[in-house]
Image 1 (cartoon, rainbow, N blue to C red):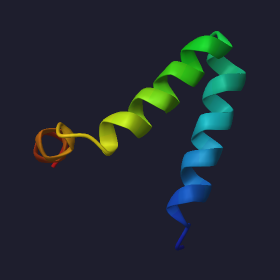
Image 2 (image 1 turned 90 degrees about the vertical axis):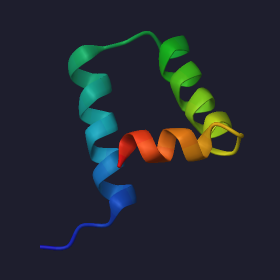
Image 3 (image 1 turned 180 degrees about the horizontal axis):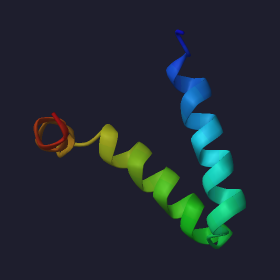
Length: 51
């Protein structure tokens, strides 16, 4: 079964927020931080660490 990545991430994010109930500011900081780091000079370093 092929599931699009965006759908899997949305489902995991929704379940995580519903089950763990982190504060909204923490969710926003993680989303914004991930977005900013992905487009920075640190992106290649993080990419090699993840792989």
